[in-house]
Image (cartoon, rainbow, N blue to C red; front, side, top):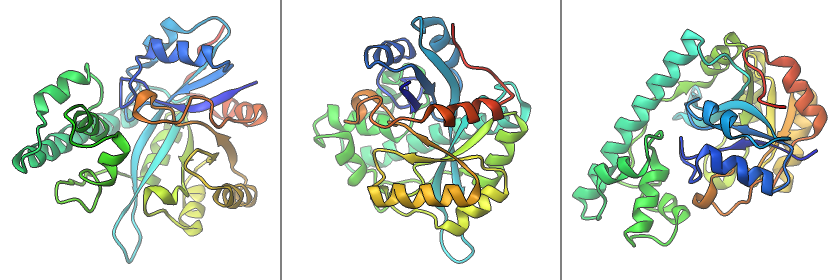
Length: 285
């Protein structure tokens, strides 16, 4: 079986609609795909309706979180949540807050770029998102389309980088609160790309142990942004902590160069996830 448990559609910051994403997964020979758009479940129904025969879709979401060190500034972390109840009041309220926070932050960043003379329009960015969760990737795409930068990656490395004067921070969820909300909703929380040092600051093992103590159930180990050494370290830590290990592409369509299915999850890990999730069920034949 070929299993990819981290993908994004145009409902958040991918470039393919949920229907197109399902077709991409089928054409790539995947057997199982998880739809994990940022802070929203709006793509679930569309994915279920357009799912090709033989493809299993695991409902999920990527929750924007923060780890708060005692003696340093917060670190951005992401939590993959699988098989939770989308109607759970606590988790629903928090993802609504995060979407509103993301929208307000995006508007402030766009305004700062416009004031600095860059040809971006917040109205056009929102229109281009087609109702999705608007964030920095949409602004990055606008910078590419107007010729300011050559790629989305270049936008993130320069104008949208945390050290850029145009950057605006957002109030993400404390990761331990996020874990508790996902578990309360019957879901399975998995720490996404936790040692992707190429992305910036990462948490240490003590933070991951604290997350496990708070109810974390898995680590995303095989990820395109993890080196072989980082994967080996996470795999060993997962064994010590008794956590499920997953693998995935973190596919975003044309917004990233990584192909769907670039990294995959072992069937026994998927079985462990399915056994732990009680809030929703996969879409399958």
